[in-house]
Image (cartoon, rainbow, N blue to C red; front, side, top):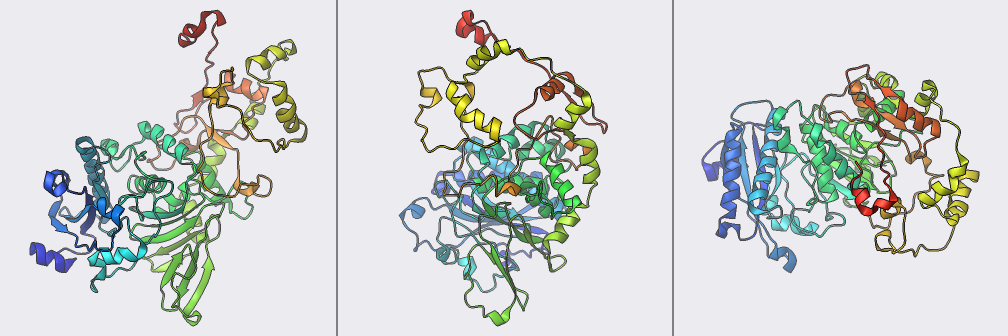
Length: 548
């Protein structure tokens, strides 16, 4: 890049880390209709407003002779923007400025040209350059002529030969994304996106302050599951004081609830963060880098392969498939192993070593007194109910049939579904399919919950066995007010009510209705209110609309 800068701009680049090189996709034909110049002007202005300098724009040389019809028809124009850190601020602050510039540019272009305009910033960082596209693995180095230059060298490479999951392939959705690449699916994606969107109202970064709004929302329906994961990972690492390994541990926690092999510190870290944000569950193998670290982690189920070699000359290779580097003789291999479920493989270029899973996780888990915070802050509903002394009154069984009818319980549900669970603690077994009409299309009255179905990735994953795989499954759910995700960890963030089972006892319900929790650490605390949603049947639909 130094030679290219001198050739194009007659300028010497500063030291590594003091400048950033981006790769940007512009819409096909945008150089003719003026849209590319419009996008460039926005970026140039935002760089200037951040008090950095745009050295110039460089067209990326490509060879599209190998492309098929579809990628050729949608082929973007790829150019590089070079930004100089003229303020001489620390590298981390420079990276944070670059993320804000990119986010604001994306928002402005989306308003002017539409959210699917074809403008896409592959990378804007001082640590790496992302070359990708709607290409086969063999076509990448053939298409991007930079990768054929002998002077183009790097101490790391993050490569993915798969398009985004469950989405239509496109240039911008190809992987790697900006900080990671991902083999598998995020099956909890809908919930993950909704939770991130809903907590946006209370998120404020200690780094960006009032400018935090420029970074939100962190998720979007216009991105794939991998793109959404990458966006949240970037927000956690650059919008807060968390390190990359810590953010990955938060997003993809290992099985900890019933895992006796974990230390108390690690268990407390995971338990604390279960109250801070929800896990992004796979099956998934995620590889990630921020320039200092490069690594990979496997989700708790371990349903995706990941194998790695360490050679005697200190080359490290990790891949989801065996035989990626077939020319390495066994005599040159120092370590050959696989990534185990929930484990992390990490290379730290600052200390120039492979950091063992236990070491990096113990180090992260020891940064704050998570054990004390969990013990003093988290409220277990079952224990709280016993301590409060709240007791339900005697049940009025004369109203049982009326209430069963009111909530849509039929004899079939009582005898075939509920009875086996109540008596034996097991789900009923059956071989008949469910051919009942969807509630929204049914002409018969249906229960409210019949209108809601769980969305799940339509892929060929094996079903989870809740008995043999109980170590990776949990029904525990924290409820109550959340804290600011981007602020530094503190006890008030885990002061939430822990519900260990979806079926509440009558005493627990009484506790919820009559007790109030007051925080001991300056947190929000919480209390409940009973909302009457009943209405006179004689009032018809208008009566339902008047319920407040």
